[in-house]
Image 1: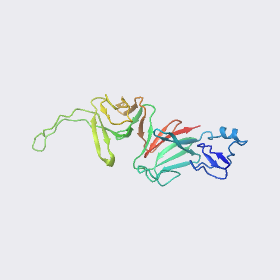
Image 2: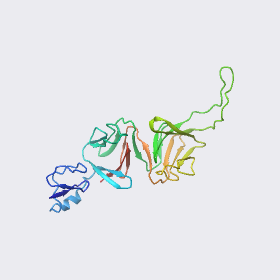
Image 3: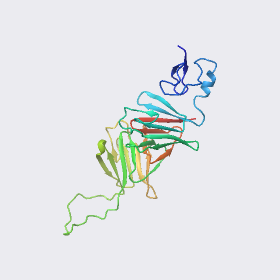
Image 4: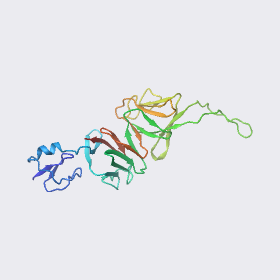
Length: 261
């Protein structure tokens, strides 16, 4: 049977098929495999300035590639062009990849679980920001000054364990909306990892020994820094954010790598 190569994922597609059965790429105008147009195929795999999302699968390398050749590309469980109907952590319409002024952006479409971007440099966080290290969903919050124990209306003080002064606390968010551990910073930073840190997750195989650090900058803002971890640190976006070549986007249970020519 005569076939042609999909210019997006390299899949062998029957000659008369108009779309690739693996990634959905439109096949109109693609020459037959081994034909005279072979050189043009290799030089025109991806239009200049356009992007594609490569699905990253654990332990198996790259999966399907999604060519972002339109103006917007919706990711979701039931709505959009990039669908994962079996992913219960994706909202029906979860995220959108759009071009604006020749740049690629990703926006959160009001999803329940958010869109996360892997950070490359120290990144500013607001109080209440959510981020991922390994399999842990964590939230950082600023703490108000502690004025010490206060008496009730009768002038009686309640007996309780002493509270250390702290500027911030880290909250572990569990499945179902429950709260796990709560760690109060003793100084101006909290280190996270598998062992030897102020907050440790020894049973999480995706966390590095020393994974990340959240600190308070000179202006009082929070800053999160990845400490060279193997699997990275991901911060939940607010609204939309620009994407660059090599960025990683996490949504639901899906991890994508961004490739831009």
